Image (cartoon, rainbow, N blue to C red; front, side, top):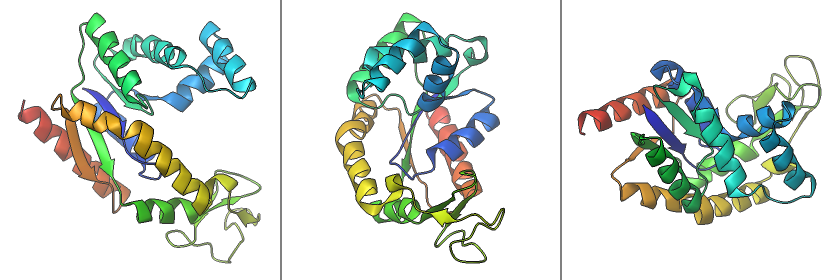
Length: 220
């Protein structure tokens, strides 16, 4: 299957992408991972992307698209892939369609993870990260440490990242609504969108997603 995963920040896209890719035996292609891999390997695309980033500029769509094209042409993506973080806007979605058409491929589904805005704010603004190890993540509601402000794992101080403040989260949501959300209507016109609730336990959302994708395939 060839799937695009969409949803607002805080919807759990990265977590769900990993589980779905494993269940479907297809690679999880994340825009963030693509950038990191190309930059660390110092590919031509990576050097180009880094030059824009170092200058404080957005990386142009054509560079992102070229990275995605290169990754989708790898042998492990022959039977499908799950795109996470790409496309981010309608122009990227159009470019992806052109790319897939050139390769005689097409998308099977666009999985839309739906989460109420207040829940997104609650999820992200409630995160607390350990200063000693950023992989130690807690939450004021969903994963409270035994001692407030102290990491259960190493005893480090827990803090809220600037990116996780409510004001920043609402700004990110506004960017999502204006730039990324329009691709849902774009793909709805193609009959590709499958929308599920991303509320509840991680495993329940994964099960919901797998069932929705299967129904979508059966309906074709």
